[in-house]
Length: 160
Image (tube, rainbow, N blue to C red):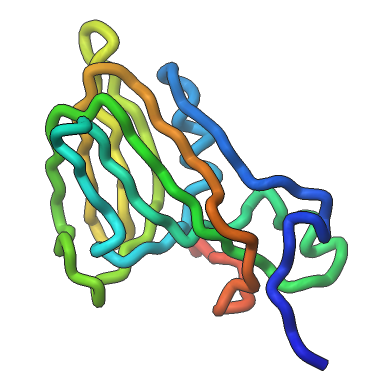
């Protein structure tokens, strides 16, 4: 018996394609992006386009209940998170561009400024963070591959 990656059609699921345009929206993206992992080399700031993008290996939290009910393996999917209107990028505890450094997303938050501006903050495991100063909030999270069986075959755990 050969093992195949899952398909969106198997569960009637569809790829995510979500956007965040107001201060409350990043909470939804944060929930879905929690525990996503990515090599540091998979993030890029396109300064002239005022765009920051990162290719995530996202745990499919939205499918967790269905996976348990159908007794099938938990899944990940590659997703592209794009932040537009970025005027400055700062990071702490991140070795940018190093393909051997694997980062893990803990949360995505938005700190509003005085007008429509503010900062999108990607908080990472191990005290790392990426701060994206934006003129206006515009973030998207879009699945770009089919789901695949999570290599760990287990749900991420957050002991208290």
